[in-house]
Length: 85
Image (cartoon, rainbow, N blue to C red; front, side):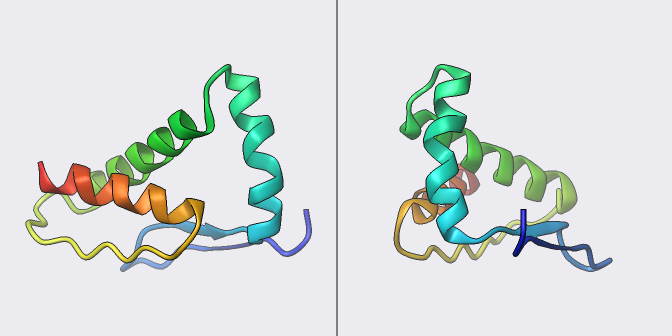
């Protein structure tokens, strides 16, 4: 896979950057392989991102979640909803 980069800074969460076109093409196959809908895949992605952030920063009371447009914005909305609880 070309175009993928990964960084880990001591003061931030580990993260990977994947080209949007690759994600857009790969999500349907990922959902199908798990036997779930794209909506359920989005829910799982948001829950996983929230769990990673909550585990990395357990004492944080305030969250800023920035969401772009498109499907990945939905993942961010899941994170924001979970952060409210």
